[in-house]
Length: 383
Image 1 (spheres, one colour):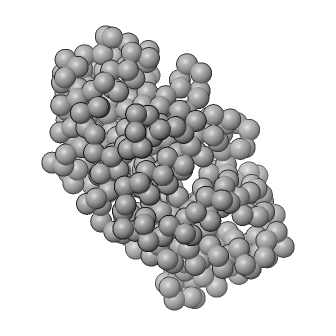
Image 2 (tube, helix red, strand yellow; image 1 turned 90 degrees about the vertical axis):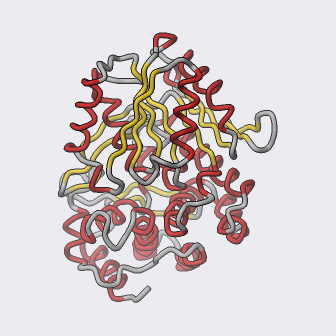
């Protein structure tokens, strides 16, 4: 699935979904190839050769950076008329109000089902633009150009798009696969270090849930990754996308339960974001990092794993500069937020907990007392 193209600077991961299959291209500083790649994606999509208009959706931090200009130039080289809209950066833009503004823009440009949406930015932009693409005219072709590590290894692949409600993250959404994903690791050269670390939480997650050897590889490459060496970044991004694609191709719409494994760390992580406030003290990757530690501790209480796995995970996250405690948050408020998680059933909180390194299980075996004890301990602990 993951294979080098003409040289080691370009890797391709195929997401095999029959007629909705698409490629994730992972490269480094090769914008000249984007036009040919986009042309191939459009030829294979239902939009076909009639795509002559595109809307680039980005944010005010990314709008003046090279990725937006590269995408614009690539589309214009294909004789596609391009408009660009930049929304305010941050999680506050990922809501129905901003989506409505994008609908207004599409109506003004007389968009139809052959108008291409291109999301250029981080996870907020990918989720927002993807949701608009999924819902406008019952579906527009979508290309993802993620510019943060978190969006490159997580939200850009798999077709889950959506917006937040004030009381619950990602509760309003759809499944809408892109026709292609273009990942240029050169965009990470200027990414703030905190954003890089947030993405690494999701990378670590893949090792815990699916690939013990990959987890071990990460333990040995901390320095290379933090130094942003291109080969190391391409490798961990491509492997993360490959692992996510493996799950998505088997459970695209979360119907068999397999895709739930991708939520390791997220049940508690989303609660942390909700309690701390979107855009508050915990960014998404930081919340997921602490969520993974908490869920490992729950697995310990159930007798599923030993303390050594939790310690090993905690150490790797700390080496990557990620938080492993919830000091200052209210455990009861966290528990209440967890009660609104989409995975819950019949009022019972369900979590993805590790059975061993490389294998996890969705379960409701943890009691309220188990959850409160773990949350209280993490909330007392200074990071």
